[in-house]
Length: 467
Image 1 (cartoon, rainbow, N blue to C red):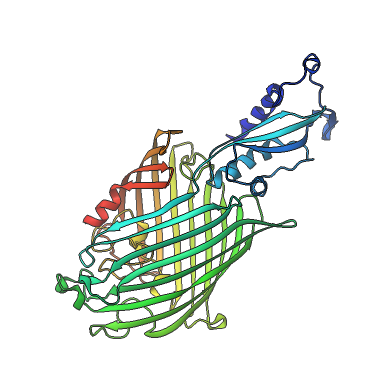
Image 2: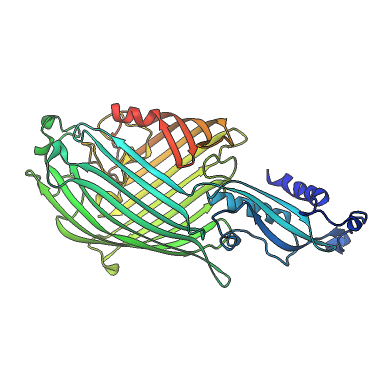
């Protein structure tokens, strides 16, 4: 797509009309040619100076918030590829349903005006809408919201809550997850582009730790099953820079106060790893992220990749000593000229990480044949409490667009067909954890982009609750 875009901008330069009708005398005059200059090799080339940059169609967003995300400036020589990179940067924000750049004549010879025509979308969206049911927890649900463009300045606010009660409706020790966060993805300080964010959490959960993963002997009386009851209170602070237009390099400090008890006769050392009683988790995570996809909902080219390395140690105030490594990547809907999206994840943990910092295989699978069920806001409502030190996931997904640019409330939609292979192991180099009878899973999903967020109606999720 990119190779043809400079030609489109050049065509706009030659055909674009002034934004307002000029006086008749000016219409009779031919458009003056821009000044010519010579590049290496003596080849003459025409150059245009950017006189001004305008954003049209803004209702909520402030222009200065957008200027942080474009790669051209007034007074520079026009570079068509940088104009198109600016369009890509604006689309990635998720604030607009469309961004169309064009070039108009300037006030005098050799000068142009760059205009971005945008259509704003609702930036207060539902990021999670959760309803589920399992044998030990007949009903649980939650909601998470995100404001992606707070006050029109490009700041992010998020919050979510999930409630699940306790097995068999026990009145005490109910399970819940609460979280709230703030994120500034692009702050300008002189020539630096900074990233800043923080998150606070409060989580209370139960991990059933029966001798068999189905807890067969406690069916109908899960309240009496052995369990690890735990709580997490704390959060993290993130700070980083943007070394390139589509890159982020960040460091995150995490601090959480934990408390765990073993109930119903569970012996120490049995079940998912966490220190009994009060403990402190503290760690530093370094992350590198690159994002070149052209759209957040239905990308047609580009890719996203993120690598993370976490170290927890007594040196930073932790009672846990471990290291964690995770690499995730996905392409847009074209792989080797075939309309497929490639997904992959590779992770490993060394040391005595608490169970929630390890890998739960069902989180990376469309469905699991067995008791395991993907977690909701980090809470496990299944009877399977096996967390692993190694993970590999590879998947392919094919998308069939249904409609684009539709009227509210349904803007866009497509059908996704996917397959994933997941391998996880309790120890590095060990055998596969059979969280699912087979390591493969499949999905058929209808995905909708609406005025209140994006929704995924997944057959795989329905099967996960039924199998």
